[in-house]
Length: 111
Image (tube, rainbow, N blue to C red; front, top):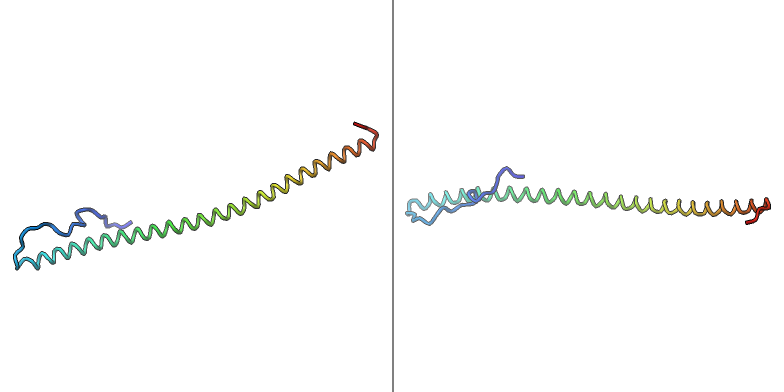
């Protein structure tokens, strides 16, 4: 963040409504201009810092979105493999039961 902190005092460019003589008007105008320039610089520095922070947050969000998409893809692949394994286990269990039953029938054991 910017080292230039915005305060009410730094942003105040006009000090009052006292009467200014013709000869002092130029001096007051220069003083006002210098204060306004300083306030503008402080404001610009803070705005630029905010822009940098927003850009950094947007970059992090994009990276997070990409990571979440990769995780979702991996999770979908894992679920597919897991479902395949569950189906294979179920088919194998059924096949083992059928083989067991066939062997018992072949040996003469009837249920």
